Length: 243
Image 1: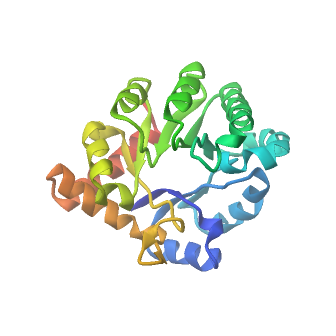
Image 2: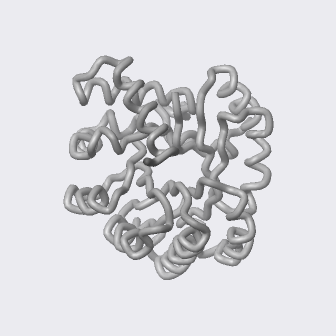
């Protein structure tokens, strides 16, 4: 199984979570929220080649951490994965919109100049602007829209410019999420948990709870569970090794 977007470093005991991921043979993309967090978070993958650490600067932190863009640029040659990045236009963060755009623009430009990265992207209440910027930086890499929740019209635009989508348990359990999933080509979907920020009954999900995504997708698609797992596995291989 593969969790393509989790915040491994933000669990209370990230080392034990990383060890359990190893014991379960789970592949994990551990996103980070600031460049300064990347170095310590990356240590969690020292003894586990299945854990990859993404270099990020979360839009909700863009205003207060914009000065870390120089560190981002210094670390960028060390990574294949970049995330969590993007824009957040929700009520609590719209006031930092200008800083968010500066940061996201800078990151996309840096990624394009470095030959392109695999990008895990936040787009809540900001789907149109995120897609506009991705369109303007076609060589920034392979964009994966994490937990997409926008309109079907913007979804089509995202698909048309080559976006991928990481799907989590909350999406497969909601009507709106199911509707979105039904419109995405099966070949452009990977699985995620966004743990520990998602969960049930005040119990945060763990990376291995990505199993819930496979179960949900198999129901939405009317596909046997094992076939669903194989499809997502092949998608991940195609994402990492594009033809």
